[in-house]
Image 1 (cartoon, rainbow, N blue to C red):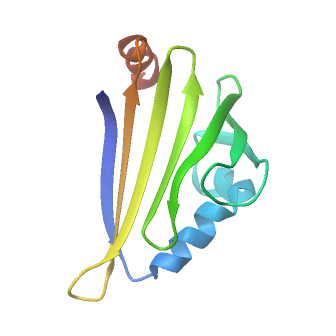
Image 2: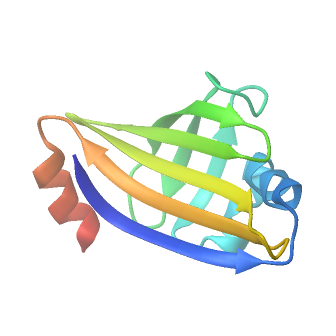
Length: 120
């Protein structure tokens, strides 16, 4: 496994607010400039598949791998010879602030090739 990126932030918004934005995939391009469009082929739940179009790249199939409301959302993009995994975790800290952690990892036999391509 190769970790491509990670980030975390503290917010006054509730965990449910983050999940509402993540569930409304049609609006992802409004806040994620790396994406042209996203289509989900069913409800926002584990096992549902979709297609997204990265800016400047080809369409990519993905699946919601894990969905625990107001806690964890994992989607996996299915690349040739690799799986690109986006893990989103939300929790509430002792100051009653929402902590959001996002990481991007890649696995599979062509992970090093994809990591170089995606790293650019």
